[in-house]
Image (cartoon, rainbow, N blue to C red):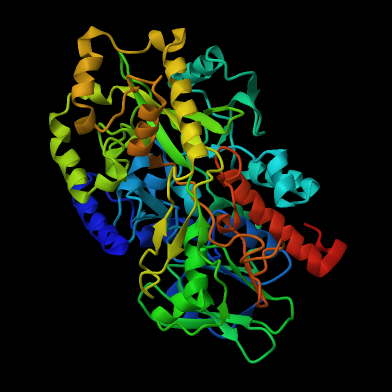
Amino acid sequence: MASRKGELFVKILLLLCIFRPSQGREESMRSSKAKHSYLKEASSFSTGAGKEEYDYIIIGGGTAGCPLAATLSHKYRVLVLERGGSPYGNRNISYLQNFHISLANTSPKSPSQSFISTDGVINARARVLGGGTCINAGFYTRASPSYVEEVGWDGKLVNESYPWVEKRIVYWPKVAPWQAALRNGLLEAGVSPFNGYTFDHKYGTKVGGTIFNKKGFRHTAADLLEAGNPKNLRVLLHATVLKIIFNTKGRQPKAIGVRFKDENGDRHEVFLNRREKSEIILSAGALGSPQMLLLSGIGPEEDLKKFNIPVVLHNQYVGKGMSDNPMNSIFIPTKKPVQQSLIQIVGITKIGTFIEASSGFGQSSDSIHCHHGIMSAEIGQLSTVPPKLRTLEAVREYARNKPSIPHEAFQGGFILEKIDGPLSTGYLNLVDTDVDNNPSVTFNYFSHPYDLHRCVYGIRTIEKIVQTRQFAGLSNDDAFSAERLLNMSVTANVNLIPKHTNDTASVEQFCKDTVITIWHYHGGCHVGKVVDRHYRVLGVTRLRVIDGSTYTNSPGTNPQATVMMMGRYMGVKILRERLGRAAGV
């Protein structure tokens, strides 16, 4: 059912959303050909690479896969199989003012693939080289030292791997007015001290990094491939992996190759070379990696047999422990239009609630005019409708009514609160054996009472911020009264501060009814259950999983920094395992 809803959602949003198509795939490929000679369409495989074998085959050229491939290519032959296309030449990926369009464009060739969890929350996964770094809000901040210690990473190498990413694609933002107001409001509300501009995870308020440069141009994990050795690196675009191929004749199943289809639907097989330490590495993300293990025969035996998938290895934990950091938002109407901004400031509380903000909307010729950025209904953020009641008709209704909504309803900004390390967890199951279809995912938002407790704390913190001097001067006056906005809040898809914040039960219900995603879902291939501490898949050889599916908790306030760092980190670790000091990276 979740898959059918998702497919219908794609068709409807494609008709409703107003966007100018980005440059075509062929033009994008031509524009980057000289600089990115390692990028090829998947169909090129049969014309020259079909007989080649590789030291590493990486499934997924995303946030972790790109830095991992770049690092390994310095010493070994690496093939990356990416199901999406190139980000280069796509204005809707590259420019901050067009941020919302990629998420709203849910056509089959979009860099974003929508899915709806069984909880009713509309979500998205990346389908493009560079992964989530191509469609996210760009905020860059590291994991805490305690997180690094808990995961068991080498602190010295971690502190070498973050800067490797940062010097290539990370910038300091020019703080927008709405973000400056949040910064000052957080401090006045007691979320202190002010830690200035820093990548580090520290309690209090700070300005984080961004992958948008000062001109609003996005840099992505795909750019990290430029740090690799192009002679050893091949990246196939629109290469959709169907399954991992195993040799099951030995004591343990051994991964030996991959079956994939190209952009024309033609099927191919590619194999590792015979070197003992050559490996296939899954970096397909928190949905894609557990899904691929299941399709390849690794997972709960009973579930695999339902779909007539030959069982390579029974593992009851594949797809289990899925989590998504729940987010709730409050709209603050303003007297004047607010400059567009995505995430730049964060307040980090000791209870495990993060406070961020977004504002305004892009006004390029491509933009969907009068949208709410991260909170737009066009991208599925139907926060004024309780999750179980969110329907495609609600999306249609919003689109139909949008022209009649007063312009002032889009004049303002949002303050967001989200939960760190939710204790509520769920699971992922296959709905069929078609890799192009999303699996069924359940996150069980707020099923654990402590998650609700932290959401209530976050909403009350936002109330304090809104009452500070910073926001008193920004918020709207009688020209567009709060009462009028309240009456149209569902139609305009905005939530105002709850009236009875002293009533805990009332605020808890508000949290449940208005929950949305910030796209930080993770899990499904946990360490100790699906992979070991070196990310080798338990019970088989020559197969690892290196991405956010291995996380029990999402790192930092926003995970992309640590996922990219992890790709670099594990690339260096693997090279050192094979070469020792001769690794030289």
